[in-house]
Image (cartoon, rainbow, N blue to C red; front, side, top):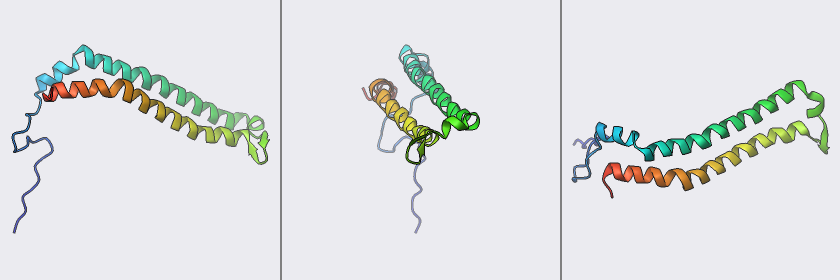
Length: 123
């Protein structure tokens, strides 16, 4: 007994679902002002955050390499500035992730959902 093979992910559903958007429709969306605003909003967040994180990370690496005396200053018990700054890398990662989620939920997701719904004909 053979089992039917699953349909490919981009095949139209047999139940008469919405047709797939055409390349022309994708191009029209890509050239729309709304899509341009979506890209600007994403880049306006992602580029500064990437730069901020890289600067913070490289500052930590350079301090670790060239400022051993500063990094070894004890703050509390065996905790020194180097350990605290090292753990701050994790905090910075979580902070940027939280900020991105907040930005995406407020600015990116509503616009991208609207574009997707228009493209798929769900409106």
